[in-house]
Image (tube, rainbow, N blue to C red; front, side, top):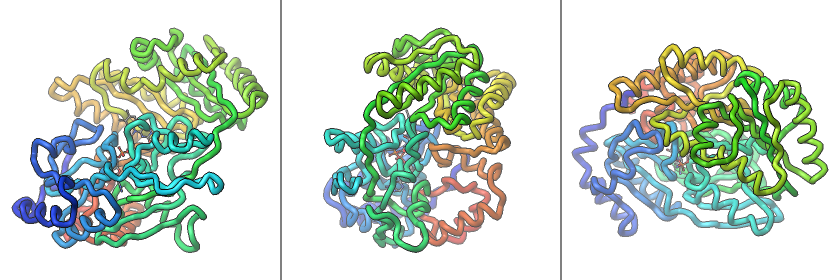
Length: 478
Ligand SMILES: Cc1cc2nc3c(=O)[nH]c(=O)nc-3n(C[C@H](O)[C@H](O)[C@H](O)COP(=O)(O)OP(=O)(O)OC[C@H]3O[C@@H](n4cnc5c(N)ncnc54)[C@H](O)[C@@H]3O)c2cc1C
């Protein structure tokens, strides 16, 4: 994966730039010691690393604006960073960039239960937003598996989703407003608790913009009342394709479970060894969760079991109590850690129409066999958001290269069947050069014009999202 050559002029000016940043921030908020910047040289896409010029950790929107003004005047690139859990290399620095981390900005600014919103600084972790309102019976719906660690900042930038987003939508459906600092230090308020004002829906432009347009420092988030109850059912199958077809049938029947999660045999075995969740021996496992009143839950589970029986399942196991429900979810929620014990892997994130799940799983296996690699699948099947995990040997000379080539073929397959390159992890550097497989040159040009409007000098989050060859002219001109 190629990155642009860092600017020798900026590298040569490191000392005065760091001095200017120290002048506008409290003591301890600028890190330039190479031993300490090491923690910021990658995110969860650990195959790629680069120490930044320095790291700044402001504590307020005003401090972020001050940093941006300095970087704008010095023409230094800025890489916004939340918790650094991006799987797409979204917060990977370049050597001439300042990493701007919002991890110290964690305050809850306002809670309004009657108007159903919470306003927070964006360094706050996803899970802690729900924890803030859970005693009052509310929650924040988007629930990435990384929710203990990831920050609202990254969730907004990547338009993150999670297991329960089938019913409640992803971040963009739960974001009401944002405070954004532009590259020149201008602070803008977009949307708010009462919804977007008249005019362009800029909130939808900012959400999912991967740090390309501005730094989001505060967010107004929708909170929802907790459902009366929820219960999962686990359905085991002897073929991946059959499980995929069953998911399509559940959705086709007009049911909207809160989650439909899919695991294939390699993943089930790894999770079972790791979490001892009591999963059956099978090729594919669905976890379908429904919620509502007791009567609604019973009715939905009955209809789901009726549909599943039509596909000859090996087992249908409905959780009888909270402990059994927790055990069913425990295996799924441990999936990424469990797979990590099996060896090195890269985690893909492509989306396909739900009706294509069965055929795509079959074709993916053929592709993997062609490369002599194993793929484990664990994903949000209800909305067709696949997460194939490609296992490879990082110690072999071409291990990563081969895994990435297979990953590219799988993502092209997603596009070919009418899906897209990313469902929730974003483009980052990981899928940057595949954007030409999804978009025509004129589509990419239109997207780059949006960046031109927000960040005319192309200083924000360099080398992400837009293929280097496609953005070369603009970057050179800037
Ligand atoms: C084990 C594991 C499980 C995961 N599960 C899921 C999942 O279920 N669903 C899902 O969607 N994702 C998942 N992810 C991916 C990741 O957690 C999400 O993309 C998350 O939203 C990233 O948040 P972060 O705060 O760590 O962002 P970072 O990694 O710090 O940054 C991500 C992107 O956001 C930009 N950014 C960061 N802060 C700001 C800001 N203040 N303003 C503007 N841009 C900013 C960065 O420049 C970068 O492009 C998972 C990751 C891991 C490691």
